[in-house]
Length: 351
Image 1 (spheres, one colour):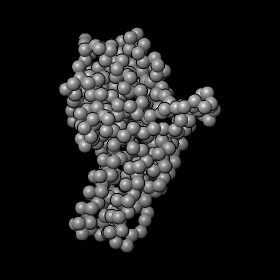
Image 2 (image 1 turned 90 degrees about the horizontal axis):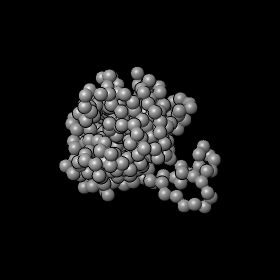
Image 3 (image 1 turned 60 degrees about the vertical axis):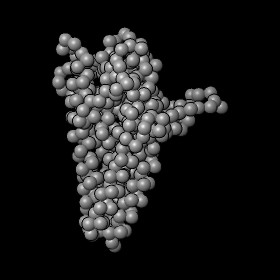
Image 4 (image 1 turned 90 degrees about the vertical axis):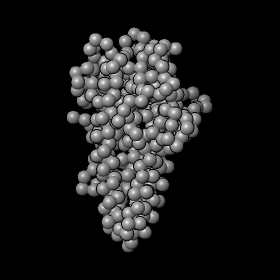
């Protein structure tokens, strides 16, 4: 059984407050788009797929409990709310992609002469399908990714993996992307061990991925971010597998800060580096990674822990939430729900 971070039923949305994990499991109600925006911005929900799902379902629950005089009013409201939701966090493309698709869908409903009530019902249905489709997508990514990892392992050996940040049920509608691959290997009896980084400064690895591994009985070990190179050298890692927030047209990839250095070190050790990406995270409008907007987070994430200052007062800070991994370092490939694409510039030979 996988964890359920997003609950939708009776047109009511509740989410697991990930700021309280791993010490406390508490669900909070999301009753409006404003609630959804705050939850995304504060990182009570995070992970590119989950951001889009919670954003759209926050719109659905607000629509379900509103009253509207005509179709134009509904359409105007939907478009306005979607535009607002995109501003909550800029790097992950999934909310923007969903907003563009739902905007077009809603406009078409009006053009077809649908009433206000019909538009509301169909928009809610569209948002609900986003939730359902995400689980199906993740399972497909898991199976394809597991097969791709095993192609690099000789003799029927079980896989030893390293992952970064959180890409499981807490970051999606369920099952997960990169952690979905871990689950698929476990289900096939081919997972020996998975190592997860702490993922400073927000500690999504130590707080969330480690929480998932323990909760679901997966064989896992937590390491410091700075131990990754030593781990690759000493523990015989077969693959590094991570998630994604946005993929540019040339296969450059934005993911949680620290991903780029893992890819560099994996290349040095001749270890295949995989990026797990639903097709909704691929942004063909961008020519390369330099075009992807990188969110910068609060300095307090570096200087403070649980409200206690740990850094020297007065020191300047730089705290990007994400970095760009060049396509040539994605040597295992980009794993989507339909295929595994190895960028043409990527080679697995050691640096």
